[in-house]
Amino acid sequence: MLSLGDIRGYIAGLGIAEDEKVYIGKLDNKKEKSIGVYNRKGEGPPPLPLGGLDYSSYDTKRVSLLVHWNKDVLESEKSVRALYDALLKETSLTIGEEEIRFLVLQVPEPVDVGTDDNGIYEYVIWLDFIFQRK
Image (cartoon, rainbow, N blue to C red; front, side, top):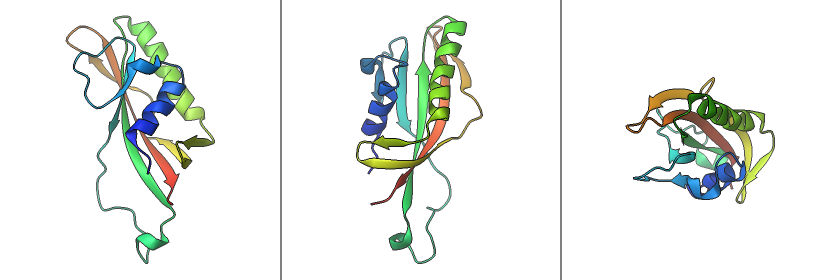
């Protein structure tokens, strides 16, 4: 099973943010230059092949990344774009013990969601990890 913890480790390993500033779950006092990794809701029925689950060879983990950077819009945009481009260029990937068959970005570019109450620029990236079912 592909967990948020595994994905958090992968995102931290990209080197965009320091390891201790890549988190899962809720962080009440977000630090500047941090990235949050969250589950994302899917819609509709689960994708099952004819014959049921025994005939399925893959599964999907839907994730949302919240990039909470700093008060400099240009630096924030540059950092989130570096993360997006690193994800976009990924061709072969193993996270934990899971072979990732496809990494599908669900937005055409990082989504600017404005600033938080402290004036820190934030962006969201939605992506799906399609992995081999065991």
